[in-house]
Length: 242
Image (cartoon, one colour):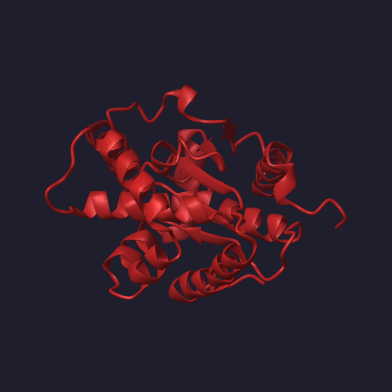
């Protein structure tokens, strides 16, 4: 089942994962799916590719009641700001897992923050989502935040500048100059965000399992390559009979 609306996607995802929590209580073992993170150059097609990955991998779920869901930067911020969703998210983790989360966050930020900032809240939300799995998280340094999770798989999407200008013009109905200015500004914003908050270079290839050029591969092919790589890395998380 593919759900388009942002908050409906989030709520459906959380509801489906409450079944995982119940299953954990009954069987005393963790059931978790992959967490795919996508870092991208502006205009390289991450939104479309993310949706295609969901459609592809949903067919191979062992449990068909679990919904793959995409969380992009805007939806993550909405989840953080909403007073109900974070509470429900946290309920699905034991004290032991929450303690482990705190330790990982301290290591990431190198301090124990006296109060939450938006970046810290967002990062903790990303880590919680990654721990639950069956999720694609776009942007916000998700590959760095989830890098120590055993179920994480990180991808970076790149594309030539002219391709990206055309894509942005098509998506936002910008003129060419407006699209160029937008891409340059947003690319720099993302570089600065990763450098300032995580002390990393967003273009460092060692931060990713896979880097794909969407100029040389169609969006459909890109999604399938990513999906197949994830299933190859985590074969026990998928059904091989479909």
